[in-house]
Amino acid sequence: MSSSSVSDGILNFATQYSIYTGYITFSFGVIGNTLNLLVFTQLKQFRTNRCAFYITIESIFNFIYQFFSISLTILTSIYGDDATERSSIWCKLRYILGQTCALITFYMICFSAVDQFFSTNHRFNLRQMCTLKLGRYLSFVFICFAIIHSIVLGCSYNIQPTFGCIISNHIWVQYSTYFFYPILFGFLPIVIASLFSIIAYRNVRHIVRRQLPIVRRKLDKQITAMVLMRVITFVCLASSYSVYRIYATNYLISQSMPMAYAVGRLIQAIFLSISNINFAISFYVFIIFSSRFRRQAKLVLVKKCWEQWKYWCCRINNRVEPDNNIEGRNSQIESEENI
Image 1 (cartoon, rainbow, N blue to C red):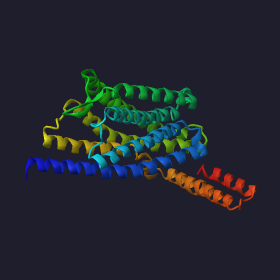
Image 2: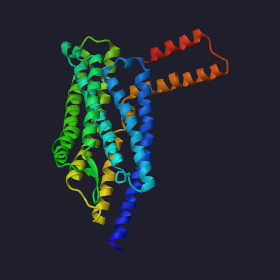
Image 3: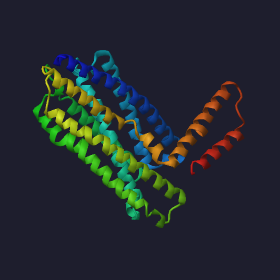
């Protein structure tokens, strides 16, 4: 068997792998992030919780990333690649959108971990330091930073005849190699999220000693455990892709070397599929490791969404239930939220 046929086989496998993993991740990601948004916006106890606010923002940008990712999958199924080598505008836009969503997701996980550290701290002044208003302000500032940063860095990508869509400016190559991928995109969020989530988990184990309502104590324990497990999955999935991007930025493979290029495409597809799990997995992590969250998700789906859907159907059929029944059902739902 000739080397050209082997390289063509590897390229074909890489393409098929990207397509199937892309559709699977998109399906699970859209469902999971939609359910996350429903739970964290519908339940009253989460509406004023800062950590839930950060998780909601993370889910929104995860949701956006899923549609960005499926567009790459569709292009791959049509052209055999992500079409970044066909259009200079798409070459830049691909990295701008991807890096914006990734940065916001990664640092919203960090914000969640830091917030739980302050929320569970035994010092009253530290617990009062972080407010929902401050959280909204910091989130807005960071989202603006992520967008501007991604636009500036994304504009440095250009199409090269033998290498495809790459960073063409040497200064930006050095920046990506020594700061963006290893620090801003890799080491910094991993260390911040890991450190603060571990300290918060240690704090919450002594939360019984503080004079707090039992509902608040249960919520703090639940959120802290959920954030810790989310951070563990984030570290496992994000670290490998950061290392790969540092390597891929500095060691470019020309299309004139078919075998090396095909292997590089396969490695890229594998690492990218692992990284994409980060944008789809949060709801499933919460469901698996938090029995209380499972009850809350069931409450939202059965008691809120299903009941609301039945109410709309009855309204269409001119069978609107009496107001006192609606009020009674709402009061029952509010009492069940604190379970």
